[in-house]
Length: 190
Image (cartoon, rainbow, N blue to C red):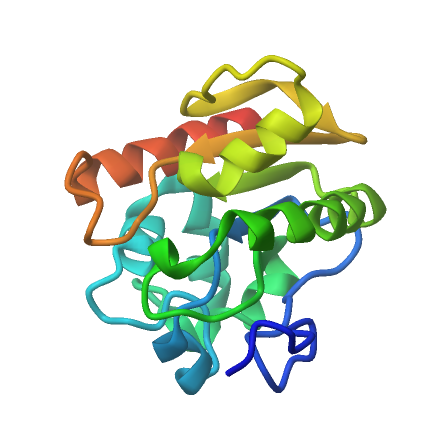
C-alpha cells in the first residue's frame, strides 16, 4: 500500500466511529492491519483495551444496557449510542505503530485537531503518550513530554485525558493498571 493513498477513505482503513458531543472519543495511534481486516477497533485478542474497559466503571452503563458482562470489538459501533467513539491520530494501518513516520504524524495532526474541535466530545482520551505527544507539541510551544491523566490544555471545548497504551507490547502497565486509568477517566466525566 502506498503512503500516498488518502487513507481517510474508510475502505482503506477503519472508519471513524464518531458523532457530535460524545462523552469520550478514544484516540489510538493508528489502526493495526489486523483490526482493519476484522473491521473493528482493538480487534486483536491480545490487546488489553476490551478486557480492561469492560472491567472499568467507565463502561458500566454501556455493559448493563447491552446486557453483557464483557464488551468485545464487535460492540465498537454500538458504543456510539452510549457516548463512546473511536478514531486514530494517523489513519494508515500498519502491523506496528513504529512503522509510522514523523511526516505522517505531522500531516495527520491538523485533521485530528479539526475533527475534535468540530465534534466537541467532552473528553478526547488518547491511548498512550505516543498518540498524544504530537498533539501536545502542536498545542504547547515547549518540547515537554506529556504525562498520563487529565491534561491542562483543551482542544476547543474538549478536555484531554491520556491513558497507557493498551497494547500488550506496553509492558510498563498491567491490565489492572489499565482498568484504574479508565476508572480515573470515568471520575473526570462524573
